[in-house]
Image 1: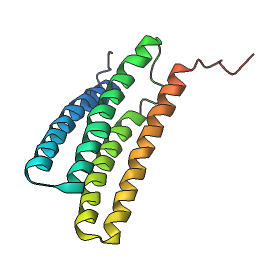
Image 2 (image 1 turned 90 degrees about the horizontal axis):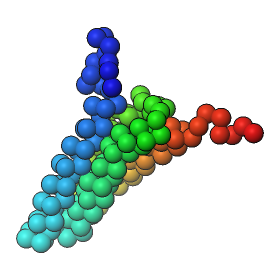
Image 3 (image 1 turned 135 degrees about the vertical axis):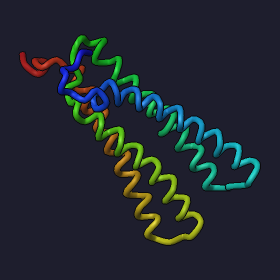
Length: 149
């Protein structure tokens, strides 16, 4: 993908697609650490929660998002419909996942309601990014005249 001299390459969808892939690797490492600590340090419910979410929503989902944003538009020979959503998805999704794990862990440790509410807010932010991904790819892969007869 060629960019003009005025466009910042670090803010292009392709740059964020690579960031999704790097984030997935970081989450895989975090999941492995959580798994080891769950066994050796007895992290209990929090360890299992962190392990599961770093694996599924961190490693697997970020990998799917990065590859989906990269390959699916190319396979359909078109541009990503809402390319400007990719950066929002990346930052909000990562903040949502980290917030979910951290605030849920704090709630498990303290049983204080504000942490539960922050955990729920983080989960909602994370869910919103999944909806953004689905809408973006749906609109990208649907031909503009698909609804017309």
